[in-house]
Length: 270
Image 1 (cartoon, rainbow, N blue to C red):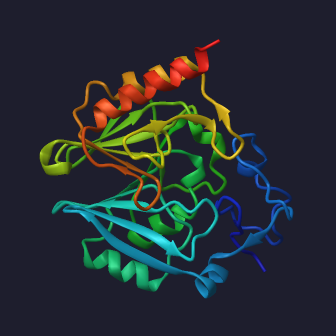
Image 2: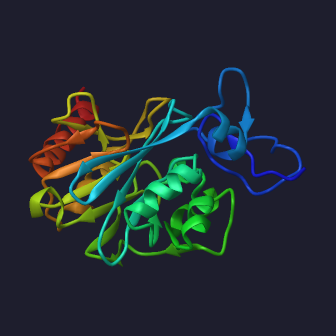
């Protein structure tokens, strides 16, 4: 029987095959890892038996979408809402009838944009459910494990996708690592949706930056400086990271700069 297998460690859904793939290329890359019990797979139908969807209001115009219990990397997606069309930022592996109906109830999805390959997950299923395009940076094309005509690869350093939203290539964690700017968020002070290209840490006054988070491989100073420079032209007071509660609530632009300064000082100190 043909299935689109899902890696249980990273949540990536693969192109349809009769047997599970030999390996998950996302997890054998040094930025990720294969689980201690070896490569394990499930399917979307399997996930629907064991997990449920969660939708929560983050602020006016922005909803979080996640899974319970936590699965794979454990991120939650974010749904930006607008009268002319909603945009899903990042993705989760689960999609079921309940989630589809909840999202339709708040206007559906007109486009999907994703920060980097660790959050591609079941993006094709989400795209097909809402008949919408997926915007990925072309520098990460090689990491798409389930190709689909809905995927639109963009190039360059920024891309406007409508409703005032701008995708910004920061690099760092991945060559095509992307964040999204929402100028009207945080009471019109501006918001960055960062995934973990900029990682909101436990002390939410600060952020950090890594090439690999699970394997603790740092980024060079030049990559961190590039991230800060990429978002410098944009105004923002808040940064939403990839997990529930990981939010720099105020003065986020200053927090990003002082976090980068602290990081660069730490890796350069003798």
